[in-house]
Length: 420
Image 1: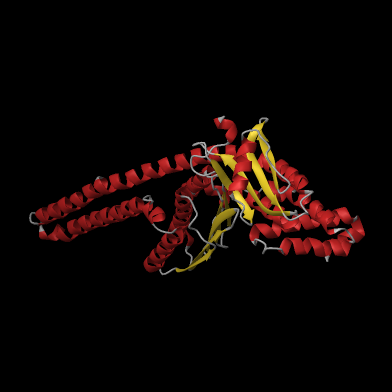
Image 2 (image 1 turned 180 degrees about the vertical axis):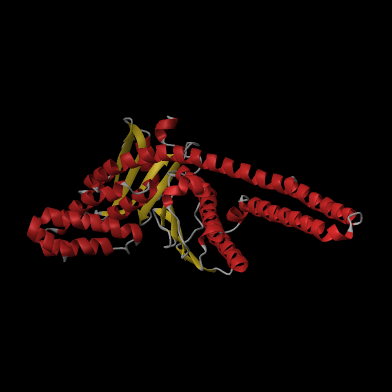
């Protein structure tokens, strides 16, 4: 056991720190089964020769005070804090409450047995109104913002062992305060950026319709007039020159057809309705089938996790990333295969497009690949990042990562400090 080795080398504190960090790392990817975290801490306490309650509180403090916890999305962090509260503290249930814009008491996250009972709700509301109305069994701690109630952390004790529950709540409130403050700022910033992305998509959609109803129809009309002109001229051109004249007309027809095809492809690519109207994985799969049918390039798609909870803006951006990457594969890569991997985790979502083509020099990205620069900006607007791994002759990997964003409160909710 690594905790035992750390204790031998660096003392019990190092072992408990390691266990706290490990619990957070594991819980982020794979939520614990009831009692699992408690069992791990109890086993470590036995190895270290410590009382189980002492070890549990030390691990709880370390888990909520570590860097990995502080970097979690606020709602995920709150869920984890309440899970650990029920697992490690003498608590049967815990919940986090705010006052919403309509004046009602709203539970943001909860864990345990009946964590949203009327009793806990009443205690939370009283605390948000400035009255601490706990009891021997129900404990409450206010999470403050600017010295005013921001949220209420409420827990129901477990039997007669709840004497130290207030200490756990104090640690949890201290850890959640900066995260909830960051959530308020993040909500406003991300919502503004989502609005910007949506406005950009609406403009692109309008451009697609305008292309279809304007220039593309003009090209069709021009092609008909060109065919009519060719037929009329053919009647007055001497026989010796007919083949040459017809050849020139055929060349113009070919260039006009190529222009029509390019504009139609462009108009199709900037319409985003397919990415929103159906699951993003289905939209991506459709793009891959189209690439395979038109070019013969072998394609594959792997989806890890559900994509149903993604916002429309996230779906659109991920779809755009894949579209641009596949467009470059078609036009530039000379690849024989391309694979797309879409992963949705609790804290992030990312998409990777990998081809076995000829690659390119990434130093020329700003000049030669304006499309890639454009999707990098789209991803950045949603708080994400784009990575490109490529070099001449070694294929290309394009990866875009977005943070999993969920509002820190239900639609229309706001913190108590903003409404009082």
